[in-house]
Image (cartoon, rainbow, N blue to C red; front, side, top):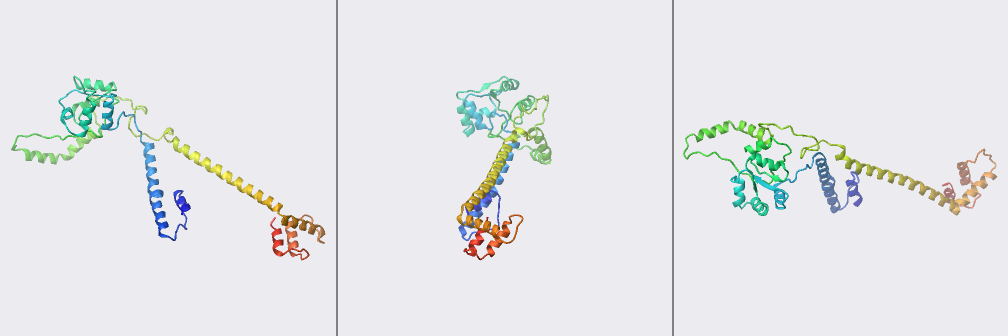
Length: 315
C-alpha cells in the first residue's frame, strides 16, 4: 500500500492499485483525492501567484499594520481638519479600529496641518499618514503627486446621505431620477474612484520597474530562477542516480561472473570442455564453446548428471 501511495504522489499510476480490504481502498482514495489531487493543484496556483504578483514596497498592507507602526512611532498621523468624522470617531467611537488607534496616538498625537497641500507635503517626507475620504477633494489633490500608496483594507466606511426638509414634495421625483441615472452614477463612480481617473494637474510619475509598488509585473529571470534551480537540481540528482544504477548493475554482473568462476563445479566443467576440445576426433578451426557444450551434454562418458551438465553451460 505504501508503494502505491508513493506512486500516486509521483504521478505514476498503475492498473493494479486495488486492495482486498475496504480500509486500504479508503486510504488510497482519500490520499489520491486530497494529496495528489487538490493539494498539488493548490500548490501550483499559489506558486504561480507568487511568481506573477509583486509583493511591492508598501510599508503596511492594512489598517492594523498602520496602527502598529503609529504606536511604534515609525509613522505619524496628520490631517488638515480635526473636525472630520474620522477624527471625531477617533475621540469617541467604541469601534475596535478607533480604540486601537486611540491607544496608538496617545503617545504619538495627530499632527494638524494648515491645509490639504500642507498635509500632503508632510506625506511627501515619508513619515506621515493622511486619512482622506475616497470622494473628497483631498483625494483628487493627492493624485496630482507621485509615489503615493493608498491602503483601504481594514479602514472604516461611512455612508453619505441627502438631507431634505421634512415632507419635501420633490422627494419621489428625486428618487425616480436617481433610479433613471443609476447607470451613469455607477459609471462615474468607477471612472473616478475605481479606475483612478485624475482631475486637474496630471503628474508625469516615473513608472519604471524600481518604482512600481504593488502592480503585477511580467515574469523575469530573477523571479523564476528559483524554479529553474530546483528543476536543475532534480535533473542532476536523477542523472547521478541513473549513472549509479548503471555502475551498480555492471559491478554486480562482474561479481556474479567471478563467483561463477570460483565455483568448483564451473571450474571442473571448464576443464572437461577443454579436455573434450583436445580429445574429440572432430577438428575445430576455433574454439566453439557452444558446440563443445553440446558435445559435453551429449557425452555419456562423464560421471555427472544431466542437471550438472546443464549448469556447466551457464558460463
